[in-house]
Image (cartoon, rainbow, N blue to C red; front, side):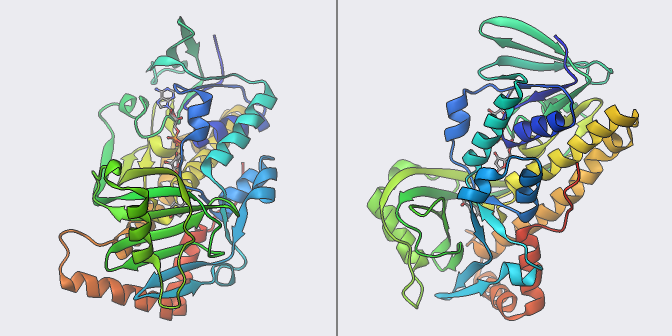
Amino acid sequence: MNTQVGIIGAGPAGLLLGHLLHLKGIDSVILETRNKEYVIDRVRAGVLEQFTADLMTQMGVGERLHREGMRHDGVYLSFGGKRHHVPLSELTGGKAIYVYGQNEVVKDLMQARLATRRPLHYEVSNVSVIGIDSTKPKIRYQHNGVDHELTCDFIAGCDGFHGICRPALGDAVKFYDRTYPFGWLGILAEAPPSSESLVYTYSERGFALFSMRSQKITRLYFQVPPDEDIRKWSDDAIWEEMLKRMTSCDGWKPNVGSILNKNVTAMRSFVVEPMSSGRLYLAGDAAHIVPPTGAKGLNLAASDVMHLGRAISAFYCTGKTDLLETYSATALKRVWRSQRFSWWMTQTLHRFPDENPFDYKRQLADLDYITSSTAALTSLAENYVGLPMDVAF
Ligand code: APR
Ligand code: PHB
């Protein structure tokens, strides 16, 4: 079997890349180890930068995003019991964020892929890549008990943080890593959102975040130890802690409702450099992880894919490899800027087990400065809606 681009992983990165290539008339095969339901149902973050929403729109997969997604022109930072509004659109020349679950993004992309009738295989196993330094690298895998070998011009490693592609880059790569001494306990609750905007709270008891998925579903998080056992937390105890951290002096608090889903996620920052070797190119979580505080994970996957799609398409149009050669450096520039922002949001809004009273006061001063300086607030808004980037593929 042959294809132009073998794509490993059918998360947002793999599906977006497949569709982008399709729009350029480039053939691909997408391989995914999990089943369709698992990929759709896993609960992930749900904030799209302006660029990601624009990219989806221009790729023709933004129809439901604009119908059902929620455009947010602002966000709140809450500390010392007071909520401070950050007018995102006003500070960024009309840009916004869009609250639309990652599983909805995946559903839309899955449907778009099916409509193209190009191959997308779920529940493959024993995936490996061979000959990435040659001009015809191969992917070996099993599907329905049968061994397959797929010969490609290029392989895209979109297989997430635990995939097989990053280890296949070999020894020449460098890793940059930071783990945080906390995780997030997250819930989906059947309760109408009590605020029209997200609320990031820094409280003496630790970080908490108010978000949403729809007019009926609230999404909430709070900081816990990284290895916290979710079974320790009854629903009542979760609500009690959530309300203690979030209730502000003006009486605002999230609406309480039945908990539909709860889990704990550890947090880390991670980057591999370079993001490619030979004809294997990584995109998305396969190459980098950000802590969720800045809501950048999915957005970085989208920007990687746009650069990679453009580089591959330029190769087929002109035979030139210059964009492929600079892909890693180009993608990493945005990755590091988003890493910086995600780290900053994380270290400003969380309590650290080894902090001292100076750190606590410094964090409060940081938040006080940001919310009282137009220059600082503009910088926050610019990063939060996503640093300027044109959609071009
Ligand atoms: N072969 C094929 N598929 C694989 C393999 C493998 N060996 N290993 C992992 N996968 C699949 C996973 O099952 C998953 O569906 O690759 C997919 C990777 O998807 P994601 O983890 O969602 O990563 P990505 O597409 O890069 O999306 C970026 O942004 O908000 C963040 O972490 C969040 O998913 C997120 C993302
Ligand atoms: C979410 O809605 O899941 C969400 C929102 C903002 C974040 C992280 C997650 O920073």
